[in-house]
Image 1 (cartoon, rainbow, N blue to C red):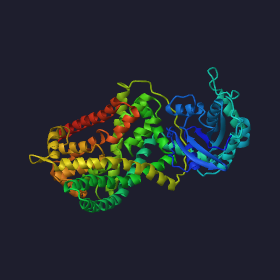
Image 2: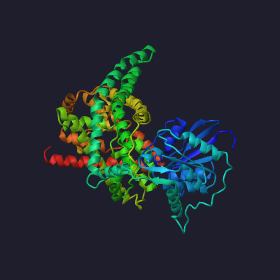
Image 3: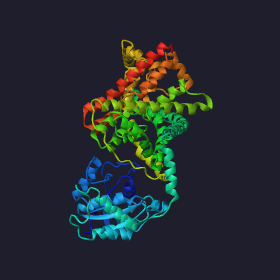
Image 4: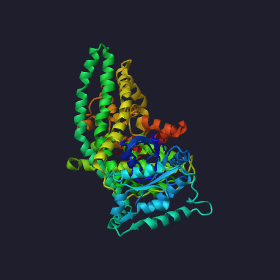
Length: 615
């Protein structure tokens, strides 16, 4: 092998630390997750060791090269095309058989192969020891044992890689059977025999303790209550923790408006333009940032903590039966949980679902989970009309918000069932979901990743549409025809429709104008009610409640607002993502229409029922 840059392909089962090893080798940020299929593209990075340079390619996690999904196809095609000088097969030291089965499939394709046994530290804690030298002798290819999280054993891995690169490339290997039509289990039998020869298992109290914990977290009667309690705790911490930072950030950003206005005037721009930019585009942008950033900066680290801890796959396991009855895939539970942060991110996450039919079901129904952008409006209305007062206010809002999330889950299951028996009929597919061992999250890396990869990414995307939306809103609120602003004209046009479903024209036009970013729905409504020409800082909750009541709000209006906030069209970013993921206008329009129609129907029913009982 020459001293030119060598290409190394990292392949392995999901959840074996493949992307963590990629990070350790390259120093690049690459998202790692505790569930299958999290890596769905090809990430690349450069590194150097000794005299050699390497280009590392992180292939999607796969259990087999016999392709059944997009991830398996990508990994298989890359391996079979001989795009890499060597394939590094990462195996889990605590469950070596499955990794060796994949390694034998890779070896059967020919080319250089290195077996990398990861999670050696976890194996030791669980009383498992792996004889790497014996494993190498039995498999006939270089092998190394490492702990990617602790970045230990990497020198030994590079030594194994160098030995592989310095040997002639192997022809297609036929001496290791990977299974065939008349003996589909033989590869697993070989792997089991190899593991018996090189793995020693001692009695471990850690495994017994984890089994006891899992019996509670996934138990028939305890799983769902625990999941709801954890969700309520996350919401409570988010709501309580975001209040003061949001107020401080809002005051800071709004103080910058006058200097920006003055700067624009100083360069000679007309007043109409400076006002549109400072009071329109900038003010909406400032509002979105101040409202979104603090709760996201709290929610995403908490969500990532549960992810790294290993709880999210257990939550998916708990929801699998419900999705099975709905004719959907259990992996949809994972994308549904992702939707609590951002529906657009959840739409991308739907790639982990193998079946095209079930993937479309997940994409079309994912917006029934309220994203972070809808939290401020939901929380404000819950607090004003329903939550407890005093010290119990935060707890009451968190519990009520959790109840709304449950309603969103029920809407997701109902819609999934409806689609699976109508336009998206088909056989439900099976899938493999690992329950990984509980791992102590690394707090520093967790915070950096959740802030950079999630919080700032979502915030940047929202900010990109908030500024243009601000200009449009400012124009509608300040351009008049016969003494009436365009905003008031639109409000009057929508008033009859709004009244039918328990709302009003102002609320409906607020949702329409909030299409680019859900965060600005309630501020637009306040602006319209007060007839101000631009968005203002929201008043205190008591003052806001008085304003809303003065304009006809009641308990019935608040209920219908909450329902419609939960069930209406996705934001523009989510719809664009769905269009990109499906490549279809038809499914994108369905993703728009389904929650909207259900929201109108639910609001109509709630309006009729509450009117009948005198609310």
